[in-house]
Length: 51
Image (cartoon, rainbow, N blue to C red; front, top):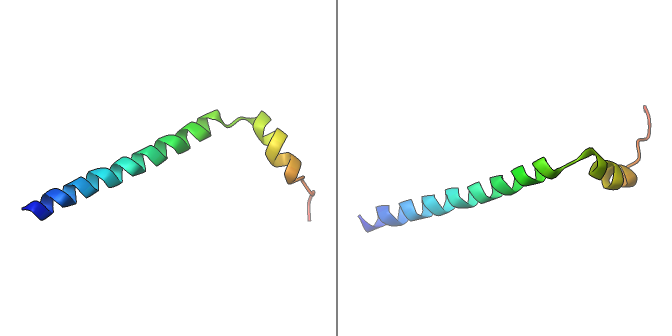
């Protein structure tokens, strides 16, 4: 019976960690803007045109 309790504690912890990571990724996606992409991403990886 004790092993089931430990199992459920691990599951709660695992899903808690997954939830924290998902919330962090959601915040990154929501705060992402085209201006940020133009300023940082597009400056380092210029469009090379059609190959």
